[in-house]
Length: 112
Image (tube, rainbow, N blue to C red; front, side, top):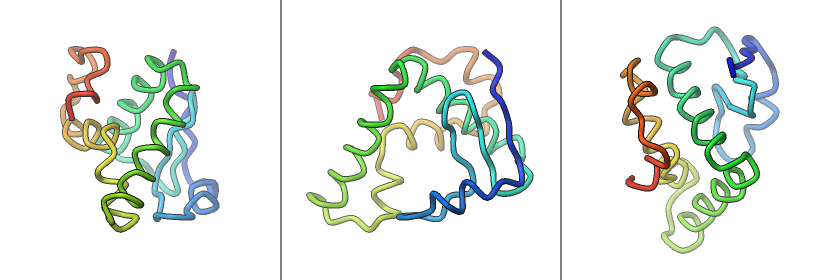
């Protein structure tokens, strides 16, 4: 399924409770505060793949679990906890590779 891209939205601002969100993926939507560049779009498309393979319902609780675990038990700051989430590690590691999604192994985030 092709993502529905929404740019210049206030939604990321309203969702910026713990960290400042520039773009967010809420399947099948990719929502951005401003104009999205190729790197950001690819990063968010990686999240779409993650969400699909976890049937959406698994992605969001796991995402919150990893963030809370890092905040509460590792003592990381909000931003550090965000960057420690395996989903984010995978997306940041491959956001510049436009071919990554063509060759990505399922559940690749588990190796991060």
